[in-house]
Length: 211
Image (cartoon, rainbow, N blue to C red; front, side):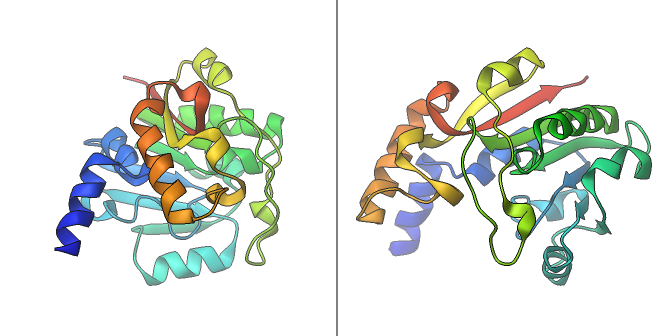
């Protein structure tokens, strides 16, 4: 009974990973830049050939142990343009990544992603600047920049609101109020509408079709 309720709940209130899977679509190859652990492609990575790139060794090790990706590279994501051939992946993803880079470097990363993708670029990031400190011994978890709906649209991206109404969440996308289960439900209820009004969302899923 509980499993049935949970299954129905997630059919109505899509988690971010389901939106992401829909946008990845029928892509057969995917480059996951700043893949971390666990990558949001974990639930559907068996359906495609994926390469995970991250500079933080422990994240690579954990991900490899669970075989989330087919290939791993421990390296700076800004070197991806030299490591991989242009248009060598149908889809290139950076999920919760560009906010960890200075603004100029974030712009460079987007250019690199667009050069490596044959069909589609997908970027997931907080809506605007969100303070975040280091986490789990990983200094790379700090946020250094913020990205708005307008600037992503100006770059040619279609933008979807994710994680509900922005004021309900805080650092690490944690629910701001208590009891958490109630406010999580409220946040999920707002997501039904917020996906079409990304300016009001906590996070944004940005998609650029290249072909």
